[in-house]
Length: 116
Image (cartoon, rainbow, N blue to C red):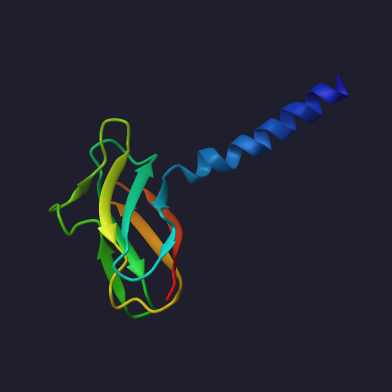
């Protein structure tokens, strides 16, 4: 009986972070030189939610990603989206935060590595 309680607690602790986080984004490839094409995929957003995807190059320099070829990014009925973009040509080598924010409160972060 004690083992069953421990197992239930373990499963709860494993599932809780996933439920709390909700939205997530992946970037493929997750590293490359400036101008390298990338694909940004999001899941866990609210259906119909308008999403902004931003690359934070510095505290004062934030660039929009994914909206170069589309007017806006909108999550589909399952809360997912997929957009093509590229690593900005002015990006210097380093690791940068990529942020996706939805107009209905969803939020996700990832990172991308820019190389020479």
